[in-house]
Length: 204
Image (cartoon, rainbow, N blue to C red; front, side):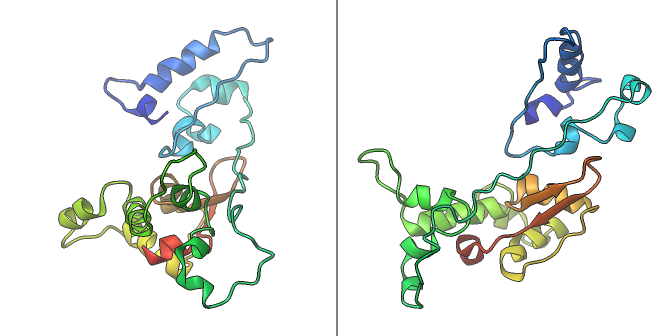
């Protein structure tokens, strides 16, 4: 979906797609769904007062309630088992906590497919925490400067930093830096975010 908001001309592709969708019959129950791992919700469903279309404000269109409660944290962890300090020595234990990505990489369910080594998963987590580029490249480019949002992303898994819902950092941290969205106000002005207890990111 993010390619739709790359402005290469006067208007983005999303602008034209939106107009095309508006030409569909309004009484047949059709709606469009956009998915992406690195897009801001405000790009596709902004608050009405910020929408560039006069038809939105004049016709008082209502926004769909946002989808955000996709609860997948710790779904692979055995929460009934009492873990010991000894258990924490083994990646198979703490890789089960947090988002299911980590445990699925270590123990894939596709026949004889071999899982990733623990250090490879940690390296991937490091890449994710700095916005998706390789950590090595990021470190080379940012020798003398780290942005505020990057600092918050890196320290977040260890320090449990609260981000003000109205802050521009909230949306950026969710779309690019592994932070979780736990609530979005209906007007899209406030985004409540959190960093879950995630040993893999804390180690990264």
